[in-house]
Amino acid sequence: MSVRLLASAALILAATSTAFAQPRGAVRSSQPVGARPLGFAETQTLAALQRIRQIDGRVGSVIALDPTALSQAARVDMGGLRGPLHGQPVLIKDNIEMAGPLPTTAGSLALLGNVTGRDAPLVTRLRNAGTVIVGKTNLSEWANFRSTSSISGWSAVGGQTRNPHALDRNPCGSSSGSATAVAAGLVRLAIGTETDGSVTCPAAINGIVGFKPTVGMVSRTHIIPISKSQDTAGPMAPTVREAALLLSAIAGSDPADPATAEADKRKRDFAVGLDRNALKGKRIGVMRFAAGFGTDEVFERALAVLKAQGATLVEIKQFDDSAIGGNEFKVLLAEFKDGLNDYLRSSPAPLPARDLKGLIAFNQANAAREMPLFGQELFVQSQATKGTADPAYRRARQLSFAAAGPNGIDRLLRLHRVSALVGPTMPPAWKIDAVNGDQIGGGGAGSLAAVAGYPHLSVPMGQVKGLPVGLSFIGGKWKDGEILSLGYAYEQARGAMPNARFLPSIETSPFAAPALRR
Image 1: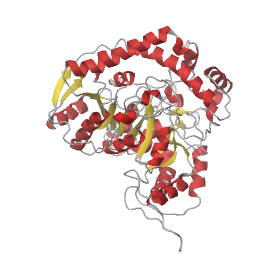
Image 2 (image 1 turned 45 degrees about the vertical axis):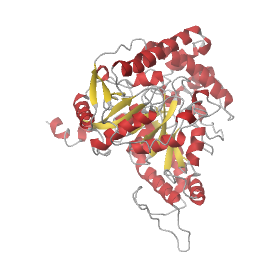
Image 3 (image 1 turned 180 degrees about the vertical axis):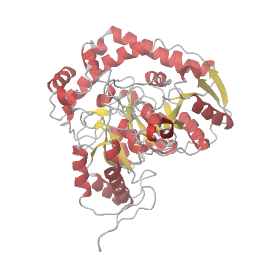
Image 4 (image 1 turned 60 degrees about the horizontal axis):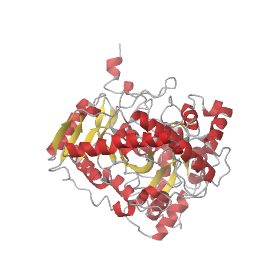
């Protein structure tokens, strides 16, 4: 647990000797004689804070607790019932601004003073829905866009986040803390952000639901950027229904973010639209070109569930994605430079650097603390670009988007006459490796949805030797509701999934330990 988390936990919890029950039941608290009874939001908030204090030291999900959480909860209770999210504690990834005393750091020491006094529009929407923001979650520093040899889930501010299913395993990233907080049972609702896989990968690897909406469904204002083409925030939760409720709360147009111009027209109550019979009569494309990496057996069981629910499965064996990767990388380097420079210059907080060049210098000057495990090659490469004014950037964006969207997802849906595409999201979690960085053995078709800006849902589909893996549902632009409904229908038919066990390692599990003994 970080020093910031310990300090903020002490501030919030020192004033109470309350006893807590489980989070979703009827939570009672022992009160001094004559004290007013706690409201629902206060009770839920205190229970979440207690769970964080008791559990988070094992996984490192939470980078800082908000000392205003209890006063937020009291105001929510005084304001009356606001809807299905009333009083629910939420954790926010620490690249998203929220008003109050906490900085928005992106995990970097350079932003420890980045207290802006601003709520990102999505945070304002959460507050209006009656949720209580209890704190910030750890992340892969700079949303995993600093080094080519990074360790997902590590930041200089928050340290290493760990997978609650096996503590020596990686949680994926960059929304590592948001995913592990939900998987570990600290909260049921968290917000992550994704540029390419940063919601769906940690969701799959930690055994929860993660949804990357259509780019433009959710405002990006006051979120530390990587890519104006691909960035979006998204919900992370134990179930599709809860993810849909969270998306309904945060979706909507924002005049400061032109990408969201259509959001008010496209958003709806996504939870009301869920249908357990949504798969019946649907043609679903099976992305064999994006399968494998140890997930075949679990994937076949998931496909059998889809078929049993009335879906017609259409095999898609090949797809040429050669125009995506290299061009996407050029796009991200250029957009990161311009977007980050704009963000740093616009922050009202006193910062040691106001552009990417200054950040590179800061990291070099503080290398012992900022770069003890890996460097900043991506920063250096991004700084060397000409930014988004470069015709080479515009050409790369044109090529990558066309390959992923019109000639990718759109073409596959049309050619095979299918409603959605499915495949395994990612391989099971790899071990945390401070020497070699992330060692990922393959990964599904998430980049298609990321580069196109289309919706991508990951739903738990089972385990591979005790480690969770997810099933991806991908669809066309603005088909967020349909994709959520298809995933919901699968989830309802699939059955329960195992909870996190906080094993030291999979090698100590009952099925593996005997086989490893001499």
